Length: 256
Image (cartoon, rainbow, N blue to C red):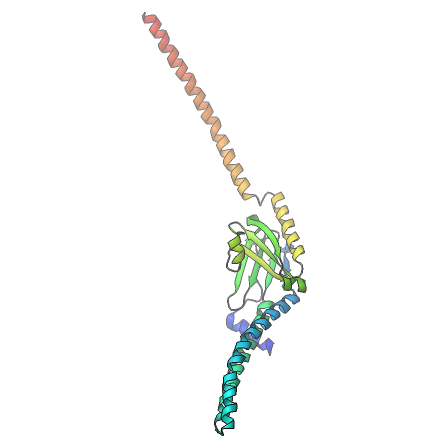
């Protein structure tokens, strides 16, 4: 049944099967997926939300059940109709939660983390597919975050901050932050971080990653190249001034 639901969602929402490779050497491509324990983590959150939502609904349903009991004692024949209210409400609630569970499973399966020698690409989401590409030249910080439940399940998130991101406000709104990419729910966080750091070092050693340094060096070289002709012009102007002043002084002596 779930397979039919997944295929229907893929056709209806036009979910691409897998992301295109980000810029870089195809032979260096590494693909990472969310760990199976990440699905358990999502299930735990789903169960918590379901319970906290069901509890107040159940308390509200006490009223029609109590009314049914009271009216039945008084002999009202239509009293059983009151039981339709909790049955319908709980039925709709169950269908909605089962639908959300199927979407949760699909969201878990549609997570892609792709790394090449020059960039990385992250895709997630079902109804709203979000895809983010980060070039290594723009990466400023790589960190690992892990909550209590994640530690219990041996999973973690790898957060990659790029130029313009990484502040406290960015950490609070990472989901909406265009300067933060996250490998969510992976069980090899250290491996992913070391891989990105290694390829960052390789990119810098090749001289392709230090774009700001190269630009600064280019500006300094241009300034140095311009400074030499200016010095020559200054030297010639000074010599001409001394010559003119010397000639004027000599003419004044001859006149006396």
